[in-house]
Image 1 (cartoon, rainbow, N blue to C red):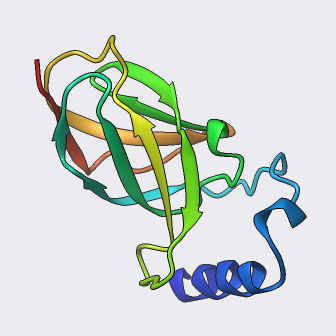
Image 2: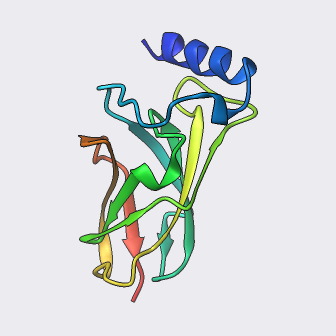
Length: 123
């Protein structure tokens, strides 16, 4: 399944710029978060999530961390994708995120990602 998704994304990316796609069409497939970098930060820090199934319309990727939620500030396809990391989104840690370690996940058009990746909100 991951190989098929990776091939579809890479094929689509080679066909033109991301503006060629209708970003408002949900895939009905939940996004997958494989990694967060860095894995800790304070409010207003810029953080990157890696995985696949994100929206190219980056504000549609809602990142939930420390009980706070915020829209992504950018989206990009990775130049050297792996089976679990095809895309990346960045976001800013929201001011209302509660300090401590907990799950970080993404909601895209109502579909929520996995919650097994941790992030620490630093006071």
